[in-house]
Image (tube, rainbow, N blue to C red; front, side, top):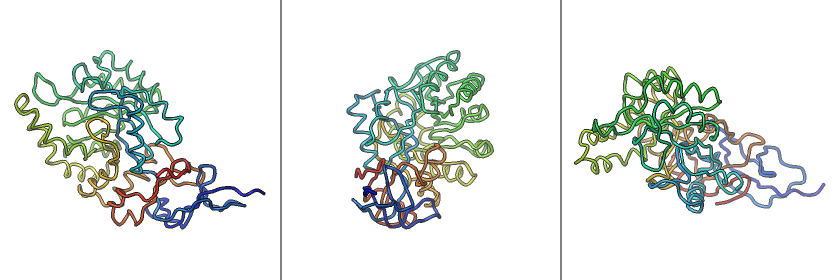
Length: 363
């Protein structure tokens, strides 16, 4: 039998938070825990190994002005790759990034189609802007175009009120979420404030992005229904600057944004303690750069989430939630190697020693 070229990964393979193996092999781009017959080690990698990090809220192909050229989107994806984020949930983008599916050197993307917002109630150039009567039709359209997710804008500033408010009536979101589920898609929503959350959860939503408006009244509801949150704390850190910029025109909104920011860590800790699933997402691609997944894990620990659980929120648990494999036998070899145990100190995530994507060492 002829020899087969393989990658031999040695050290501590963190298959799960408590399941550790000593080595794995990569053969034809996939993971094996059995040494291949006739294998020769063309390259060996040593260290602490995690499945590729997950950024469950980012926007490849988007910047602060809207869709970007393909070359810019490629740089965004490569920035995530260099940071070890090899599985991305694109939480709304006007760009068609299907071309990345043919690139074995770019992170895998799970798309939520394009944002669906109320007319003149979101960032210009980002979303389909529709009225409630058209919401179901646009949700169906994006459910068919996406990868099992649809993204709504649940609240935004109402210029007449001068503050954040819910974008959709209860009946519209109930019908829209039911249609997405009928088509096999899950639904998530951008929500900063408090007043859209109960309607969305009781209408059957699957996830809420940011979720800064969670309170003692709605946290038990999220926990009971199993609705996940992606807090994007690295993005919430920008709220004070946003509030300063809007102070003269919308003082009520500015004060509200500051309150949401001030209690952000308490909100996330209370959600976690109540049993709400919490996952890592950065909101990169709008105003924030890509490559911030490690920073978000660190932010979750600042909020009081235990380090191993914060790590799981961006690795093992996040991959399971998104229906993608980790370091299982036969899975695509998407993994990151570190010099020390990331369970002991999540800050090591910011300094990957090696990045392996589809079985190839790419960083």
